[in-house]
Image 1: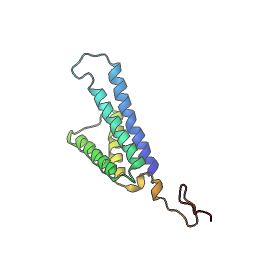
Image 2: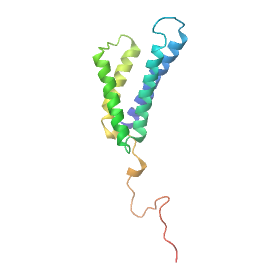
Image 3: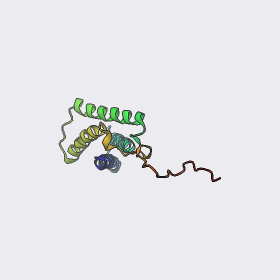
Image 4: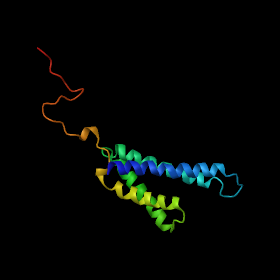
Length: 134
């Protein structure tokens, strides 16, 4: 489950990069020029937030709650806007939003923080206090 969440986080970056590159490569003088680049930056932001949640969410509850709220908000905006995916990329993005929202609910999808790993008896901890020889 951990690897699925990191895969989804990285995959959320790709539509953002695609949107930015396609918007900057089109040379139209329309009213909505640059809007796709803003949407691309939004996708990069959500992908980076999910990757941060994977890396530090087990120990940082504020980050975990923020990412959960952001994923739910993104899913709600997609549902309220009645986004009907017509192209393959839009379908992939819709699946990514749903999967990221579902996986952000489960703490098992986060990377285990080093402080939460159990220490076996008799094992020396790095940087721990050592008894003075005397």
